[in-house]
Length: 229
Image (cartoon, rainbow, N blue to C red; front, top):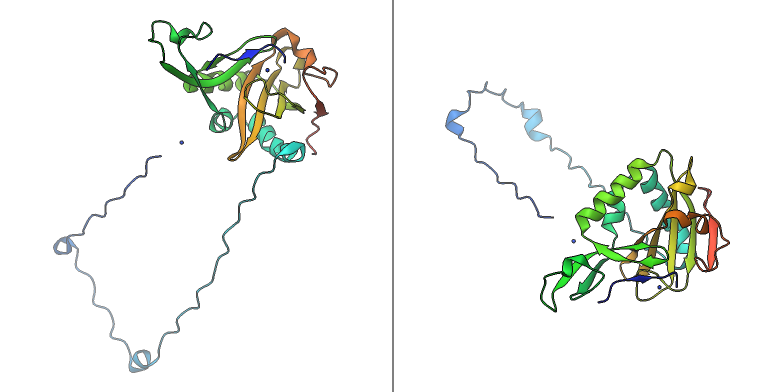
């Protein structure tokens, strides 16, 4: 698989608990219990009627812009909580087959070797994949750096930048006190498993293109997120 060309166009272990048998010979003596009265012996104890408890039904996720608006509430909550594990948990793992001039981990590896990671892109430049642990650290550091972590906007584009097929849906994250210098865009696609993050896009000095709906090359559809969707 070739590296991503982002040129502006496109599973813990179950813990087993072992029961330890008690040694009755070592138990302290217990006081004898009072003998039950005849009345108590003759009166049957009512058996309580079991109460059925309804099991919550998971609401399936929905695709399209309507479904993404609903999913964006989860993105917003994760951003505000600085929860890097949210993004890690839904990130798609990509594979690059060596040799690859864009993937440093291929250096010295035999042809046909595979490296795995999460897509990271650089707007109007080449992209790459990073190891999951590095991705987790990167996102955690980014979110921790934001004084006022905010979901600024959402959008849609026909052609994903970090996936083979679209459409793609975008979440623009900033620090509300300094959006111009803190913008990062997370790309999502809707799959059989629900919403998955397909790309962490670093927009660098071109943040202004993503902070409004004026960039037709960035979006086919753009909405300012007001937290009331």
